[in-house]
Image: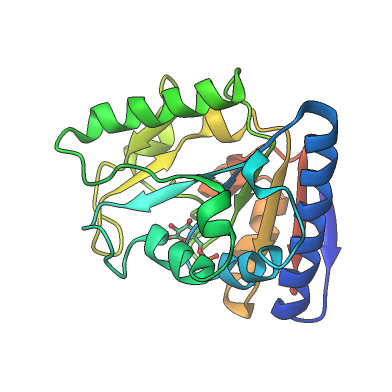
Length: 224
Ligand SMILES: O=C1O[C@H](COP(=O)(O)O)[C@@H](O)[C@H](O)[C@H]1O
């Protein structure tokens, strides 16, 4: 794991946007497209706002969601709602290829399979160029929640949590999909995550974040 420590969450967001922009340019130059997935929560939005200011060929970029809460369209609990709020009014709204997780489907299991198929169709091999991850103060990442059966899923790329977490059931990328990404970018900020960050770096299998592969990963943080 490459570890980059910065002095503030704002600097983390800035550096992460620059890093993603440069990776996107190099992937587009070498193979014509760049496919990445963004997490939800609170951390990613400043980075995304900064990334949106970059001069990139957005129509060659595919954006997937790492996880989503099962909630109505436009609901404030949805990661997609936050994502659209950040991109509203930017040219990315019409140019970037955004692939939302379909959590309003009547058949959520089918929706998981369809999302996995979309990823396979777009990437050709289900290996995303980049997956951005955050981590909660309890060590969860994506919607891989401590103690939830979704952490044991090995035969699905996208799966549902077994139990509601913070009031909502969720749909999430699973270990098999995340761990085969070409690059993983962790953005972890906030004092309350310090203890779990150390456990994650020590590959503690008792916390979900500890079971994400580290060899292709970079961490940007204001901790340590
Ligand atoms: O619930 C969630 O939390 C994690 C961590 O969010 P953060 O704001 O503390 O970074 C996030 O990565 C995940 O996508 C989200 O659904």
